Image 1: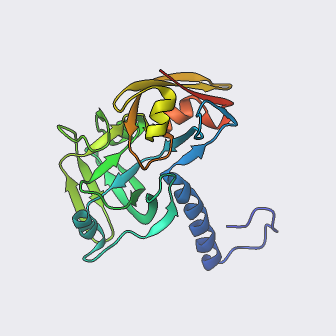
Image 2 (image 1 turned 90 degrees about the vertical axis):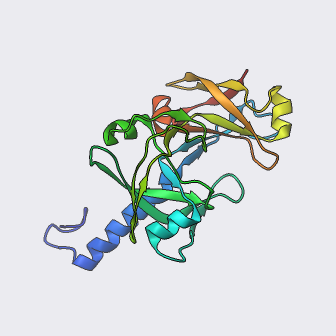
Length: 235
């Protein structure tokens, strides 16, 4: 292997190659927990309207974390997420589906929860052979499972694998601004070269959240969200 731009006769030693690979993987994995988009034009009222393209990820219980990473294991923070107190952890797991196909390096988001859950896109589900139900986070009734593999052990999930229903987190001030209530559905209009309107964006109210819409990678790619010029939430 030679370094691009260097002399073709100058090989890289093994330690240099390993260092470059680690840096590339770290750059990619840091971004794997999601990416926020904040167009200059939006109708967010008193709070900015942002959209988070939420990549595949997992939530785990403290008990399952110990199964995967060993007794006494705790989640260690890699970076903070948009909502206060939530973070992308350094811990990652491999997901194995019924076709014996694997998606490696799926990041666990913290803090730990009282349930273990995996959130994937439909594209991920097709690859793994999982017929993903569309659910709000935490609703696991009659959902499929998968196998999670960590460095210490494996966890056979009997349920908890979903495609997260697109939703918007709202503070009571935002509910008043848009004239909606918890559980209502809204539309997200994305203007730009690949503009679309997403129907059935579920309102989720909490007194401590910041205004934020969550869509998955399939949806983010469909509208090329990075090129959006304006975002609008409408009833």
